[in-house]
Amino acid sequence: GAARDFIRQVQQLRKDADLQIQDRIAVSCHSDDAELQAAISEWSSTIQGETLADSITWAASAPNDLKPVIVGQSKAAIWIAKSL
Image (cartoon, rainbow, N blue to C red):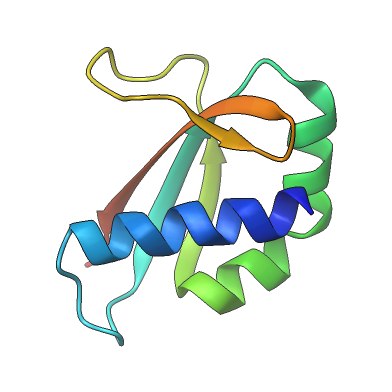
């Protein structure tokens, strides 16, 4: 369930950024929830395939201007950048 929620959040970020369907991205995220981190790591190849992400990187902290989202039962911050 958490992986699907994560995919949905990333897809919404792609839409909000007006990215083209073929655009590749880099995903960064932050969460203090170890279970969420484990789920995202376990499903990373599926998440990357569904979202056209070249990478998923865990950050020690999130940018201050980012609104947290709920992924599964956990709070997380997710942000994307278009890959070059």
